Image (cartoon, rainbow, N blue to C red):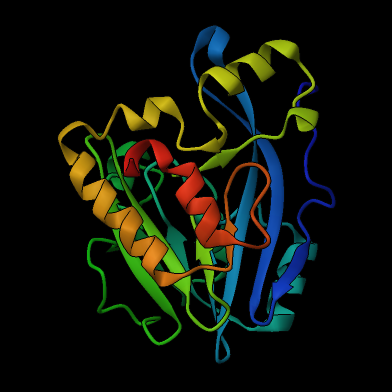
Length: 243
């Protein structure tokens, strides 16, 4: 894992704005053969009253659990797309009373790892967190990614729709080249774009919806997140689609 710098400190609750935190987790490797890349991981935690919404859970360490328990009660565990589920069983074991909400393809992708009751992220509303967060499932041929918007802080929570690997966090020149060629430096990666095909008009409408929400900041699962001017960053990142 020497070809990527992580976002220290790891496994630590970091306050972003009132009632919103992130946790930078360990590196994982994703890809095939020579295109196998190290990915930094990131979880987002949102508090609604005393309840916690945990998006794309990362590794659960004892210290992190103590930090989480100090700010609220874990109520909802979220697997936002088919690639973000690995640590859900650990969190569900630690918080058996929490509801688990997953993207439609996760159970098949997990090959038996998700062997407990779950709910599907298929609708735009009707969720127990609707008072604090808007939900928008975005569908392609490969997967559904559920996007969330914390209305009071104007924080948009994405998973893989934008990846933003910073050159100075990717040590290997070969990996930096892959990032640039794959448009994983602040855009939707090219391999993901290819999965939309006939869903591209629906993707455009979805991005226009996100822009209409007027986010101030955008939290991402991989790479540098956007602290300000989130709406402008959406227009830039999806300029290839909106033009």
